[in-house]
Image 1 (cartoon, rainbow, N blue to C red):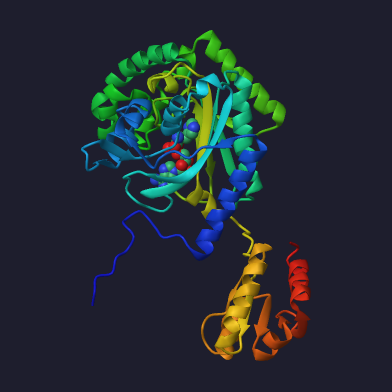
Image 2 (image 1 turned 135 degrees about the vertical axis):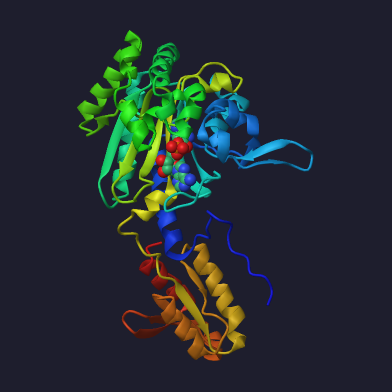
Length: 417
Ligand code: HAM
């Protein structure tokens, strides 16, 4: 027997109901993006590895251990994109968008992280991603959190969703806080988990959201970032909260929410669900005013978020079935070109229609049943001679003969096209 290939570990083929779920999420996301005046931006699936190393931070989990790195045949060091934000910032600068501010980008597509696969955690996954450039006011952060909340509400997901927000302050506040945190944690160095010990020098803030029980106990009494914030950052965060309160959004402030990527400042947020198990974050984002500069451009204030399509798709409750098709049954091969012409005309009118397979009429009707066709159009020698077609309404079980223009009208009316 010849070798059978399965999709690589942590990836999957998406079809049937999974594909319908997936499409439901992307359609809703694109609709929301259009309504909020985002333009769609497609960036390459692979980029120079430096695009992400600089933006996300060498010490972030993604850069440190999750990027798919390779050299192309010309020796160019490349990476499969692990997220959108840094690639979008690269495209923003390359496209000269700092001359056209403000600008909002929506992106969707596959992303790649070499993580340990488990339920809700894939090596190839997909996101819907929203980024806004040229918005410096706290009201914009609140607007984005509310947009995220509205998109999730429109999907009518199962389970309940919790919203957590926090502020990381500006870079000076964070620098001061990091020193304080390191000096506190050094007293417990030997009790920290191995991961956290490694992060002590490189990425101490991440220790705050460690899942390790021992780390959690140590972190419980750590100094709070909030106490190191500049007046400006405190006021900024207060205004974000005020806007969310005015809008009536229910959220919690979680001082330990730090996010795993270096580019954030001030507001960060996460939406979690109780319906997914361990991988329960469905949407996350924040403000990142320094990223364009890290990517070699001017400083441009920005805020954005992304949600994992697979995680959202898994939480959908009622996904609509695809519109049932019209299938064409030919009585004898002579009718095939005749039906092909009719099929092309119906497709051009926006009606989903196809041949009912290649077997005899009985087999073709069987396929029509299996595909839950709403109508079957039937043609043989008699119909060709009279320039007509039979239409069988599969729900009512009624069969009628129509001229071709009449048949087109009947089906167009049935499909409201
Ligand atoms: P992130 O938290 O790394 O943020 O990912 C955002 C969302 O993508 C997660 O909440 C989750 O739903 C989904 N996700 C992440 N990794 C996986 C995985 N391995 N398998 C399945 N789903 C996954 C970012 O990517 C930032 N770029 C978000 C952002 C946009 N910040 C500002 N703008």
